[in-house]
Length: 197
Image 1 (spheres, one colour):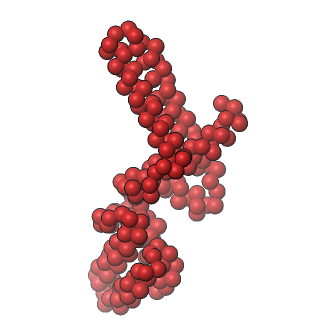
Image 2: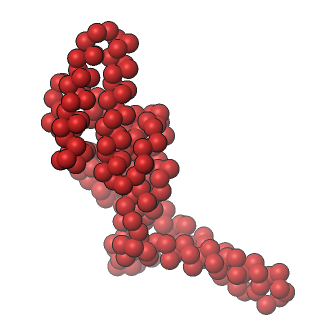
Image 3: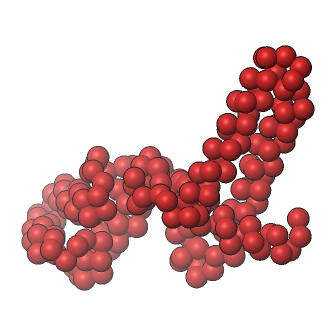
């Protein structure tokens, strides 16, 4: 692949390849214990400063969240068990408000260790302030998948006229090939919804 073609491919698919996993509710991470929302909530509770946490909720819900935060800080003082329960309740309140802000339902707090690797890589790139490594991996994965689907379809096409069964095999491969690229193009063109839709 030429350098110019690789750069063009990078520009076209990097956003879409990252958006594909983000478009699936199963990969949401704002409701995970080790996701960015709860991680920041834990820091806010430990410091007693709700300020940095307010960015995760709409302005109209700031007062309700602040009230829950203050109550949580009071209950945390009672005992270790009280702190654990109060924290969990606060996390649920925060995530519920945040999910509603995204237009997504609250389905509970997810355990740590279940965040999709693509989302972890996206977050890591933001933390490191560098995206080139991530983009290179995205392009490599996209290229590998596209070549695989293309080659299977091309091989099936060459046998398509041998029998109706071989023809159907080609059609199955063709549909998968075309829909895969159509989905990628839709993401690039901005035809997808928010990351939880």
